[in-house]
Amino acid sequence: MTSKSTPPPISELPEVLPLFPLTGTLLLPGNWLPLNVFEPRYRNLVQDALDGEGYIGMIQPLVPRQDNRPLPGAEKDVPELYGVGCAGRIEECQETPDGRFLVALMGVHRFRIREEMPLFERGYRRVAVDYADFDDEPAETPAQPPSEELLEAVKVFAQAQQLNLDMERLSVLPEPLLVNGLAVALPFAPAEKQALLEAGAEDRRGILLTLLRMAEDPTQTASVEEPPVTN
Image 1: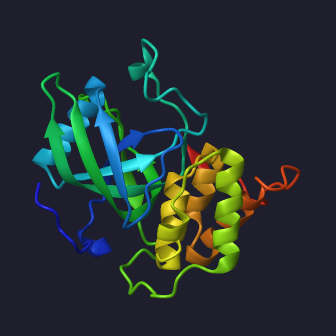
Image 2: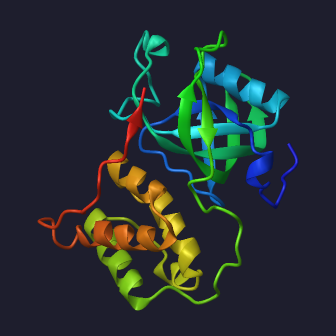
């Protein structure tokens, strides 16, 4: 598919989204997410999205699941889901000789589940969604580099987790891009990922700092309300 650089307004987004539930995976507006899609029902989902408007709803199950290697019979499960996810648009897709899809998904807009539709005959779940609760319209990205406070917290976290991060490269990114990139990439727990997803830009920075500092002081805990769920 041809990449489209500008996200559409809410009025042009689909009112019903096919869902790809995936534990511990965070998609934020403006961020890329690579997907290796091999389950039959989700191959169906990708094919149908390619044949349609190209949108997929990424969301997390409430209870962490073994999504990458599902157990036999998992295709019949209907797990509870968090109430908020992010719509992504397929920008690139390649089908492999063994039938998998390698997808590059671009985050477009967060959504709240309004109602779940009956299970589709193609095996995947669909939901009616609302976008209006989230201010995800494109905006000019401030040019200022990240604060020393944030960079120091990232450095300490990386050392504690034995991560090899290029701090010189990170230090020249605009802070909003760095915050979103770290929220997506760093190995936080699923509930922590969900809190980062649902937070606004300023709150997301604060939550990220708290999670990073927990590596320095393991007795510190993040003060985050448990997000609502749906089933």
